[in-house]
Amino acid sequence: MANLLDQPISAQIGMQKYKVTIQWRNGELIADEPTSLGGLDSGPDPYTLLLASLAACTLSTLRMYIDRKEWGITVLKITLNLSQEMVDGKVQTTFDRDIRFNENISLEQQERLLSIAKKCPVSKILENNILIQTKIQNHG
Image 1: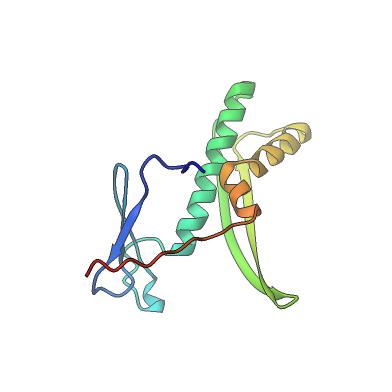
Image 2: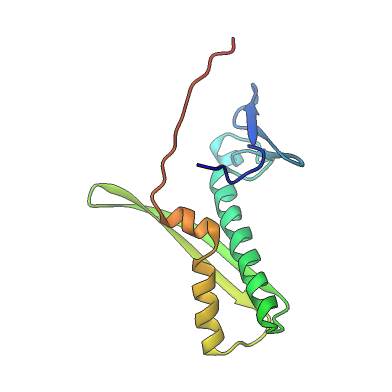
């Protein structure tokens, strides 16, 4: 099975509570928790990073489709949040995704763009069966 990334991300945490430095192929970013949870809010928290991934994928996928159709939609905006509740003894996570356009678009365009948004690769990952394979390695 082939990896989706050419280079894996890596991350580390030191002694500063909740501050995680994440290295990706072209740089670094910081993840942290808000001050209300004991962090310094020096970067997005893990939930925000997850939503940012869905936002970036959704908007990029829509932009490619709109450009191919030459629809002349100049700006796309997205708002995302998530909630969790217990359903039948299991945690159910719901992502709320609200997409807006600067231009008025037809009902037909709205329906097509909704369909395309649901097909973005990150949406497909989140809506499918996910397995997380974890190994512990001691390099001490």
